[in-house]
Amino acid sequence: MKLGAALARVKAIPSESLVRAACILGLVALPLMVGSVFVPTVWPVLVALSVGQALGTLSFVLYLVAIARDLDIVRRLRSPRRHEERH
Amino acid sequence: MAAAGILVMHLVRRPSLAGERGRNTKLWLLLGLGVFPITSAGTANIAGFKATQSREFCGSCHVMEPHAGDSNDPNSISLAAVHARNQTFGHDNCYACHKDYGMYGYVLTKMGGMRHVYLYLTEYHDMPLEESKHDIRILRPLPNANCMACHTTTAPRWLSIGDHASSLEAVRNGTVSCASAGCHGYAHPMTKLGKELDAGALQ
Image (cartoon, rainbow over all chains, first blue to last red; front, side, top):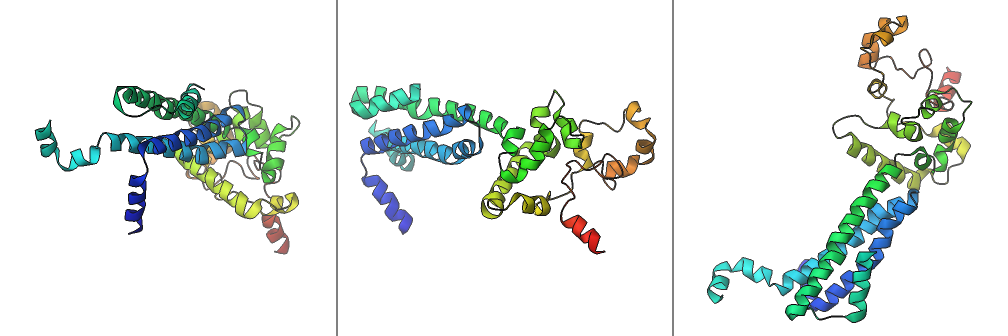
């Protein structure tokens, strides 16, 4: 039930907002990931490989969700025939 | 930088995602949120993993300072210090000797490293140096296979040494450690300063 409610909430968010959130997360993740190249000490490397990667992945996932939603991928996958008939 | 530029431009201009222009925006965002960051992350991962192999990195936890300090000491004759002076891998001598040489060795070594980080954060972070020298031990004895990764036991020069020839099988099956008191000595000067000596003193 909780997962369903969470999905419903995500569905309610406009794609533009999702992409903006993805951009902000990406801007936070990029310096975290790249910082370890310039300061290769324990904490920058650990943060890059954990928090940086997680935020970067999340931002890309948000972008993909927005794109998938725009392309109406779920409905196309559920009823490919009906979709083909329409087009 | 290019990725950051694309993302900042998107946040500032807020272009529409609909229509033909929207398609271009999405393609730019694919570069800014996908292609460039994934490339950056890949580069950073390689650089990060490389950094984790250095002695400087291993010695950055205070409990490893004595070990790294010994390796840095040009006058030390411990096994670790002798290996640290090797031009080929001396800078990464901790990793060269302690890494797992198996098929998935790199991954297993990194997983072991994460365990070290966890233990350091949960148990050893506030431990005084003297106590850590006494209490912290390698999880499993260093396998001879790690030594044999470089020092082959089939070379005539190696076999020409009497002690090597007489203990060949024991070295290969690990019942005699290369880094033991009777052979090449302990790898670090503080290896046996703690519990083992206490136990020996009590006997």
